[in-house]
Image 1 (cartoon, rainbow, N blue to C red):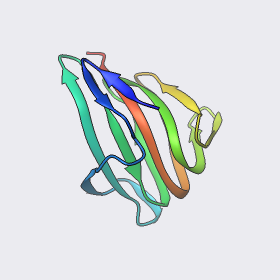
Image 2 (image 1 turned 120 degrees about the vertical axis):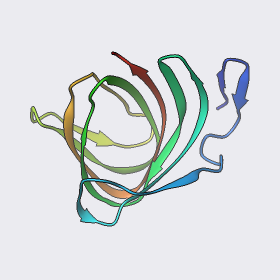
Image 3 (image 1 turned 180 degrees about the vertical axis):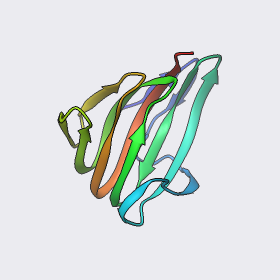
Length: 119
């Protein structure tokens, strides 16, 4: 399914080449490595494709809210409030500013994201 943002069309977000960012900070288990390709950025909005290899790590959303649409992989995301989200293709998750939790990735996860700076 094509993804079109500001006149830019990505016909295969599963096949798009990503740039390695490096080891995931706040790792609890394994050696997760993240990669990404930013498709669009303007002002407070950034849209792209992101991927992380298996492992567990914590995340805190400070100053941003994010919409995630998972397109590959598996695992769980557990919010500090106890809410558990299964990661699977087709799942959509929104993490508001202030959200925190732990990712447990069992199979490399790829998502399309939209991040909005809230500050």
